[in-house]
Length: 136
Image (cartoon, rainbow, N blue to C red; front, side, top):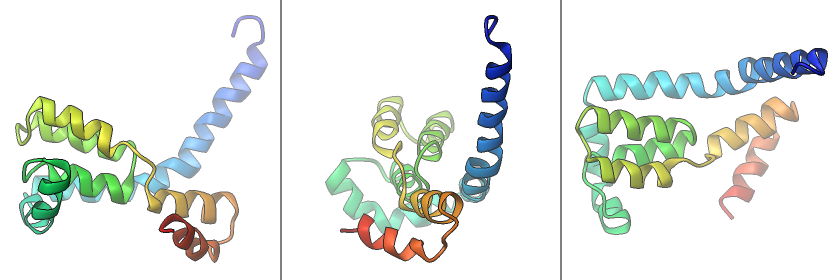
């Protein structure tokens, strides 16, 4: 940074613009909705539906199902954030939170469709192709 300040400033500004124009618009709706769901305790109803499947496959508690669901729908970093929030609210144990952190911190299909198809390539019609390829 001291030897090449101009390229450093240009790189930092382009990184911030990338975050502001791409990542924030894709993740902000999921963050807001997830926080509302957690504050209103709607997670109990959502987890009740998925609990039998996730308990057998992942061996998680009823409240541990929600970070899996939100992680699959919105990917990182919201899966990790939700796991941390559930530990902070004492809804899941610290060890279960650590397991869910590793499980839920992935790139979701929604992110891939929005980022690749719509934002990067500027071709909304590619979202169906990406969805088809993602699901094999």
